[in-house]
Image (cartoon, rainbow, N blue to C red; front, top):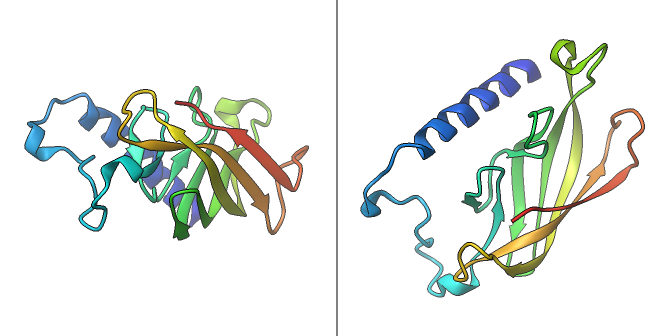
Length: 153
């Protein structure tokens, strides 16, 4: 079942990348502020591997270069101006015997985002710059229970 979800997530990412390459009229922009946010300069986002600002993403690629690590099935319980908290599955390729032949395994995690800073690409947005994963039931080999990632811009 997790394999099907992961494959679906990969296909959605590919479709998103393809859609991002097709120019859209300004009226079709997906990055318009949420209706409840009257101050766009206070919006805080997570910037994905394709430099797209995301609010409460349902999945998030961690290994931008090869796609061998991503968060899937993210359910956010909090998304605020200074932090965000959610639960997800960390889908990790074991790369055994090598990555192309490896299998993906999922591990439940608590996801925490914090340290918002003004996004260099759009000064009207702030982006979370740090992600912490806390493994709650098992974890990949040679991985600490708590892992901190500095996020890209």
